[in-house]
Length: 111
Image: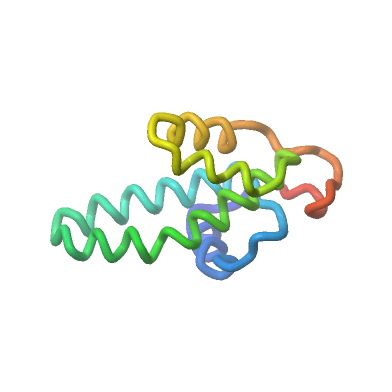
């Protein structure tokens, strides 16, 4: 299983990877990091929190697309997170579903 630190590193290192797969653990560790970072930075400055949100947006989208690939769907389904009222439910749906245990068109299973 991936650790918190490894998931954060992978989130930044693979921020432009929209073609492979990512595990549930990687996705949820990244979400936890994003929430903690936004709360801590937001306590200091709203402007810095906005900047951080922009900085973390591309890695989040890439990770979401890889997570969707892991469950066997096209990454375009990630656009659902932008729809008001559906975004949170879509994030939970994609984030909680187990990945496919076999190789799919996006690569081998992620442990």
